[in-house]
Amino acid sequence: MTSPGPVGGTPVKKRIERSITGGCLVSLVLLIMVSVSLVAVVGYVLWNTSSTTERNRTAAEAELRDLIDRTARESAEALRTSATTDPAAVTTLIWKHTEAPVITYDAARKGFTAVVEKATVYKRASILGSSPDRITSRGIFTYTLGPDRAWHVNVATRETAACLPAREIDALAREAGRILEHSNNDPMTDTQAQDVLDRTRPLGRLAVRKVAHDKRATTVSALLTDTAQTVGQCFLFTLSRPGNQVPSPVAVTPASSC
Image (tube, rainbow, N blue to C red; front, side, top):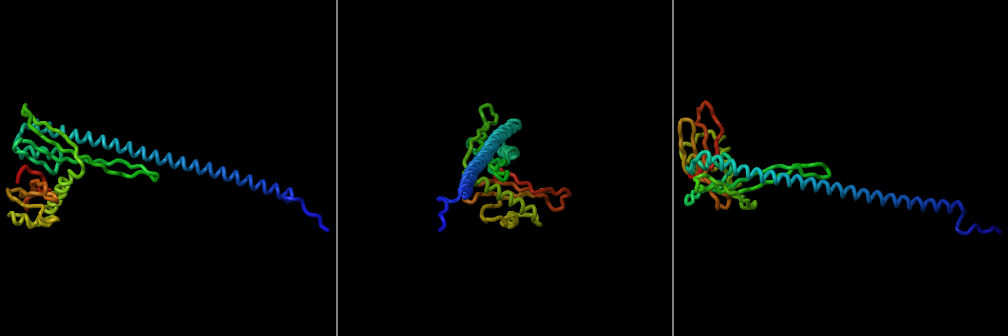
């Protein structure tokens, strides 16, 4: 008759079981430590990229505010230096120094309002690297003649929606200039100019008011409006006459009237 083996298994088997159990515990502890470290590293990287992006954006916003203020100062100084009060000349100077697509003239108070938009690019950080992002700043410049007969400017910021009409008119003016520049015909009459510019889309937002000629250039005067047709701006499109020895691109400039 065979005697029964020791209860609980052989000593060798017990040592193996204890070794396996200890190894599992060590592996579990190591796995937990690695997981915690990985979460900490990822959390730090995310925090760092978010912080870097925020710093870059804050710096870009400060740069845009400075650009808007500097543009306002320089345009007002140009008006003071010129000492002009002629609406056409003032409009041209404001556009030259601000590139504002909408510049309105208030004859009652003899003041001008320009919608100015500036933009800059900053780096948006991420785990995979960095990518460029763009922010814009919009200002409403109000130019008035002070008691000293010198021009002064006031700057106010506006929401994006408030500047949408100006952006639409700017895009329409650029498209009209491109069409005139690539046209093979020199528009001699209002009707001919309107026929050429009706290629802009959508129709009904550009109305030719006058076409003038001299030996070197043809100037088309037109009224441009936004999509809702709540804001209008006169523009002058000046293009070289056929045969001009020194052809130049079409000049597109806002005008005080058309």
